[in-house]
Length: 228
Image (cartoon, rainbow, N blue to C red):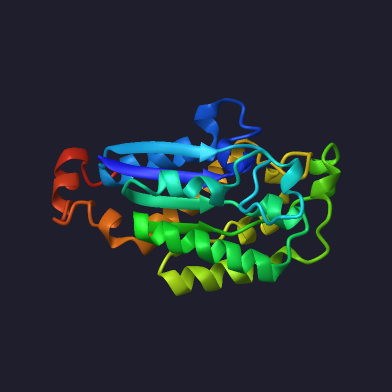
């Protein structure tokens, strides 16, 4: 059984998916099972309005506990893969890149000791209208790219995989809900594909579960050589 822990915010929780099964984490787990034959035991410890750190200026208006606050209890057990998909609310809540780096460094350090494999997710562009009912999360004055630089550098420091969800959504903003924040069903599918690609390319232990013997001739014998 492969144990996977996800820690994040409303996007990780699956907000805006038409049903839970169409949110990115269940999709990712099913796709990973199909691709590798692994039996996945998923745990999603995510919630809407959650910050990564209590040092975020908007922490008072956030959902408690912060990811960093809940980490000690969760990291008390061993995980095969830990996915950290948090930071949007800290960025939107006005945290400085320096504090963000320090706090995420502490989180990633702890995760690296608990998870055999660790994946760090980038952030993507979000709009103020997604936070119109939460003015505390409309404090950001810096481009999200500055925070993604921090995340990519920390991933390298700890040997974690870096999942770039920023670039696909930059090219396909129509896959984000009109609230300017949460993915549509298609957006969740896009997220799942990015995380799956990252997992298979960065973690040989996962990709190594794929069949090693050639299946070329077995395929030909079973299905034939042409479809016309």
